[in-house]
Amino acid sequence: MHDQHAHDLKLGTRRLPELELASVPGGAPTPLRPPGRVSPVIVLVHGAGCEGCRAYLRQLAAASDDVADWDGRVIVVVPASPDSAAIGVDARTFALLADPERALAARLGLAGAAVVVADPYGEIHHVADAAAGHDLPAAPEVVQWLRYLAVQCPECQGEAL
Image 1 (cartoon, rainbow, N blue to C red):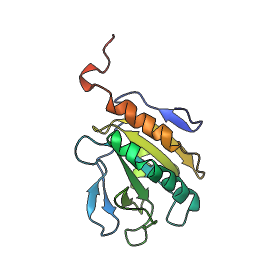
Image 2 (tube, rainbow, N blue to C red; image 1 turned 120 degrees about the horizontal axis):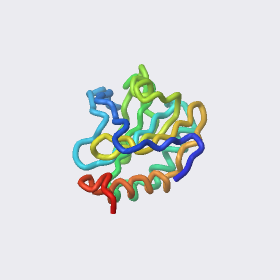
Image 3 (cartoon, one colour; image 1 turned 90 degrees about the vertical axis):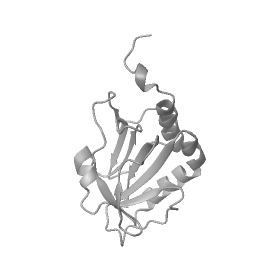
Image 4 (tube, one colour; image 1 turned 120 degrees about the vertical axis):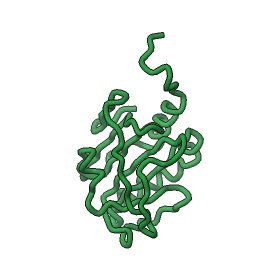
């Protein structure tokens, strides 16, 4: 689980912001964190016309069963209005949210395309920031992070064995 542009965060040092973004289609305000015991994998893309980002999403879509098996949910955030954010992703595979002001990227200090893996409580465990490029973690690495989060015991965090 290594990416030259990634930085792992200590447990509890950063949390997903309490933020609602517009769903695509429709524009309904949608919380960034899915309800229930689901680990969000937030993928910030360059935009609807970026073929590199669409190729990355196809790779993640091919691993959607593995993502679901480890209680993950991919949430794609597009820097566009809800009317122009459609990028050809299947709503049954990914949630698609519009963020025309790039509020999420600003709050997390991200420059462009990125992947953020958090646990069900919103604690961020992994960030891969590709900025203008597409050097993002491969689908198996994302699944590895979800597997890691799924087997963690919140009551035991920080205890010595």
